[in-house]
Structure formats: C-alpha cells, structure tokens
Image (cartoon, rainbow, N blue to C red; front, side, top):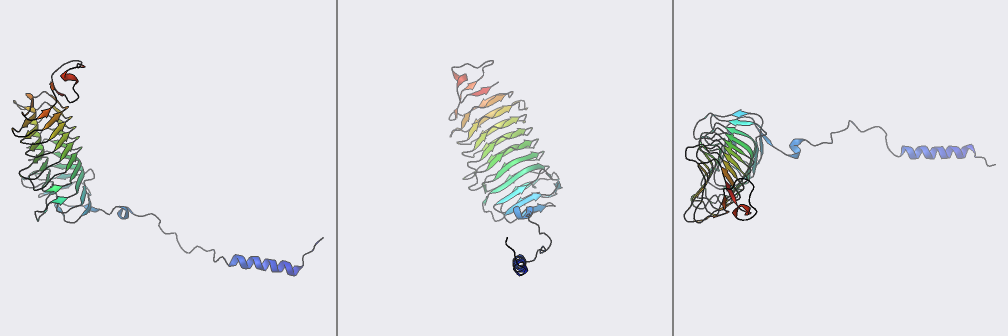
Length: 308
C-alpha cells in the first residue's frame, strides 16, 4: 500500500488554489448594457408634426398624426425623399393654389426618386402635384374631394418614369389622375391597379408618350372614363371602365389623328359610348357577344376588348 506524505498533499493543494486564482476576479464588472439598437438607428426618419412642411433635404419622413393646413401640405424640394403618411390624413382648407403633396424644386431643376405612400389627402386644390420629376413612386394614397385633380403630373421638361399604383382617386373636381405633356416631358409613366371613381374625368393622358395604363377600375365619373387626348404610344390594357354618369359619356376614348396607341383586353360597359378609337390605333377586336363566348372568331382573340 502506498502512502502520501502531508507535505506532498499540501503542495498539490497550493498548486490548485494558485491556478484558480490566476483566472481573475469572479465579480461581474457592472450592470448589463443594452444590446438592442433603436428604430432610429435602424432607419433614421424625421417626424412631421405640423403643416405646411417643406422637405429640402434627402431622407425619410413620416406623418405623426392627422394634420391640416391652410397652405400647402408637404412641399418636397429635394431628391431621394420618402414620405410615409403612416395611414394618417393631410387635410387642406379648400383653397385654390395649395396642394396636399407638392413635388417641385424651387430652382426649376428636375427632381428624382420621390416616394409618397400610405395615407389620405383631401380638400386641397390638387391632392398631389408632381412637376418635373423622374422616378416618383406614389402608392396606397387616397386622394379624395380635392377641387382640382387627385393626382396631377403637369407638363415638365424630361419628366417621366413615374409609377402610380394601388391608389384611390375619388370625387375630385377635375381629373382623378391626369398626366399632361407639352414638349419633351411625361414619358414612360405607369398607372396601375388604381380605383378612380366619381371625378369629372377618370384617367386622362394628354399629349404624353409611351405611358402604360393597366389593371385599373374606372367608374361613375361624370364625363370620360379613360381619355387619351393626342397621346401617342400609350398602352391601355386590362382596365374595367363602367357607368360614367354624364348624359353623353365615354368609356375609353382615344383622340389622335397622327399617332397610334395600343388598346387591348379591356372591358367597358354602361357608358353612352364604350369605345372611341383612333384610325391609327392598334387594338383588339371589340366584342359585344352575350352568353358563353365563342371558341373561334373575334370573341376568342387573346387581345379582345369587350363592350356591353
């Protein structure tokens, strides 16, 4: 049998204690610090708490609540701006010359990359007026009971490439959505998946070129539903245009004796005249059949327009 001397046991114990103490103090250094970052650090945004409000610097801005104004609502004067209404309402005082969201650079230079989304604009001259702008994105906006146009892109040099989508334009005094061009502007805009109801005119493109109007519902406007006035190379496809209310009303009307537009796969019903198309337009056959559609002939054409 082996025995261990007391001196050897003491040496082993001293070695273990010395090794343990070499690891440092066991007390925590202090209270735990926060490990999460704030929303402001993730996405720095500027709240808008009062109107009128001028945006003169790029960035992200949001409405902090329902706001009213006796002048313009929000005036965007900078590139690369996102304006989120956060589901709230911008309300004007019903005075002419003041707009809910006014997109215009004060030095008359073209703006780029402006986003307006998620809210209601009412009781202004124009709900949204965007002049000399490229790359604007307007989405999920309700423009309602404005005196002029709901959404208005006036003539501007080299404007275009803008998107209006999933918006509602209703009961405005002039056009629900209006794009006009004189010269070299407003080319290649898209209006899609919008509901346009109860305006003087529904959707109007005047003189503009290369625009696309698709998958919209246009109903019960007081005059024309969808009007191309001297527009060129505009594609009108998969829109549903019904029941304009004037004694003489038009569903889809294209007026340009010098250039053609492309008009396919639309449905128009309940208007005095459902289609008035130009001699140079390219369009699918207009089908008035009732009941089950034929499997041959015009009614089976993949680009047919339907009229009732």
